[in-house]
Image (cartoon, rainbow, N blue to C red; front, side, top):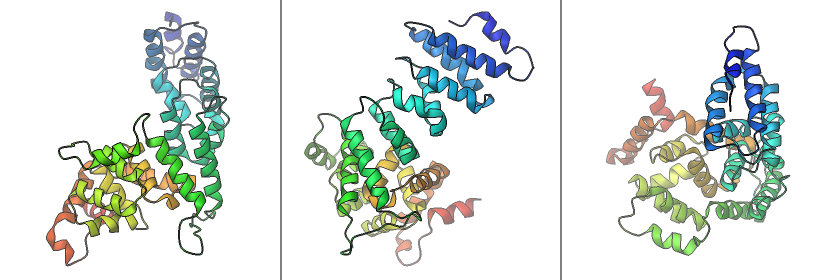
Amino acid sequence: MFAPEFRQIAAGTATGKSERLFRAAISAFCSLPRPSRREIAQLDDLALPLYGCVSAEARRFAAAALSEVPHAPVGLARRLANEPVEISAPLLVRGEFLTDIDLVALIGRHGMAHARVIARRRRLNPRIAELIRALEAASVAIGPDGVNRKSASGEESPVVTQTRHRLLAMMRPAGDPVQDDAANAGAPGNEDVYPRLRATALTGSRPLFHTALAEALEIDPAKAHEVLEADEYSNLAAALRSLSLSEEQAFLLAMCARPLRFGNGKAIGRFIETYRAVDFEQASRTVCQWRRPSSASGSTPSAADLNRRAS
């Protein structure tokens, strides 16, 4: 696909050579009626190393061009889809290669800005459309300062409950009923932690999820309750990181456990940033501290405390 002259464009040192190569590669790819797997991989190999060197305008051009083709390289498409909506909008609206899982992950990562654009997709999964509408309504129940608005009785509002159920539905694989998940969660010898935690999250029962997390971490249930109910995210991030969960898995579980906390993009961003900042070794040390019997008689160090000590 890529003729030698493409690489000659980047051979010089003049400003703009990388950008010209980036645009030329995108244009050449989009001109192919049926690109092969090799050609799709070639575009990823050429465009991704240049990505950090090109302007926002070039990225906007790439997003618009790739939104018109049925196939696109996964790496480049995901980089573009995670850009601000000013750049990523064409892909979010028309990119046929973005799966339902991709769309849910983008909403979880970027909040309502991406969700509102994704809502404009022509053949959007009805469950995702319902989720976006529920999140939009839930954002009204949460003030601009991020403070949760509960009903007078102290219970979560019907809108927030609906939001949680929409997200839980998106987590559930096709043909995988909640009852089967919950039954399998307690099966002895099940080595996969995330499906067990997901199964208990799908029930919507906080106490059940507290117990499942305590068992997964091998800590006291009271400590698991403390971790999940805390106002700040560091201990929850450490708990989930110690289980080697991906960002998407960690966010989905946190959202199910505390739906009122994630009603806007800022709250989602804070959790993701906190989760990224905790590495596996730090998280494991934190959880080991929670397991020590002596911690019951004194204050248990938080993940933030251990991170400060390590630094």
